[in-house]
Length: 184
Image (cartoon, rainbow, N blue to C red; front, side):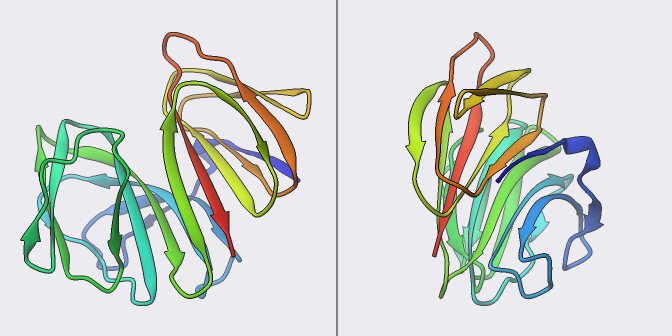
């Protein structure tokens, strides 16, 4: 299955702790007890993150100058845009934003059943063999070829693939996308 996920159709919801908002790109399965979830969140001010007990998290800054995470009392170095950073959903986490409000890309996945990797790329050709793969377009327009079929992703649109595929992205000057691979 190949599914285009337009960003403007992603539902907006409050964070679990009520301190901000997120747009959910996709959740599997579509229940409260999901194996994984991908979203984009707005962080307007410094503060705590929600706890996600039993989950692992990966976060990348999309817009803004960066942030510092304090995880269980330890402050990270500056996390610049498009640097995927992992931490436990069981940890006590807060952030200090740099340069005003920011937007971030989040992958949350169940530690006991799912593995996830996030890579930021400008181009590439690969064979997707098993599991699920999601491409998230952080550039202007991204042209993707999947099994010879052309897909066009607008800014912040995603493409979900859950069947084996040959994928090709040819770089343009503004190309930048996340490749998220999820497997059991």
